[in-house]
Length: 127
Image (tube, rainbow, N blue to C red; front, side, top):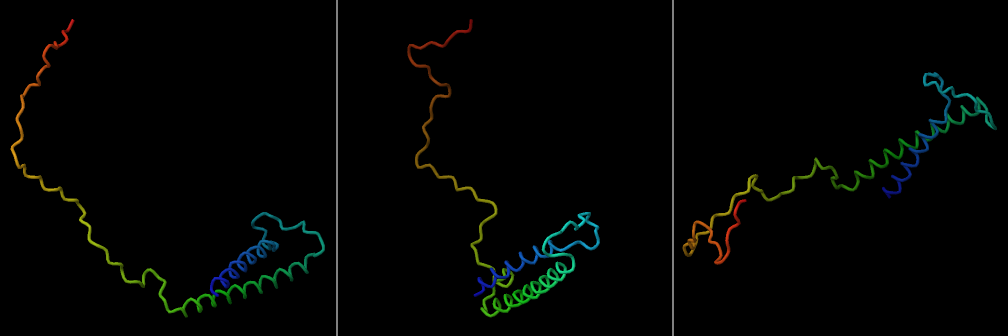
């Protein structure tokens, strides 16, 4: 019900914007002129029709707005993020701790301090 009413509400809003944009500018401050409308509807009849249509759409817009609020309050469920209690989360340390160094079971083998050269290989000489 709320979804259907919301779709109707959006349609009314789009129609209201369209009807308002069709109206002739009275002040002329925008520089668009607003003249040059010739057709089957002239000055007075166009103004009367657009004014009435704007009033009807405005009343429909406010009515659907109020109905949407009333219908959303009937559900009884709070949909605001501010009304909900905070979700409990596990505390994560801000700085990760380093793992403890493992204790060696046997002493590490000690090797020669200088790497050994393989037998029969010679180091290249500088020229």
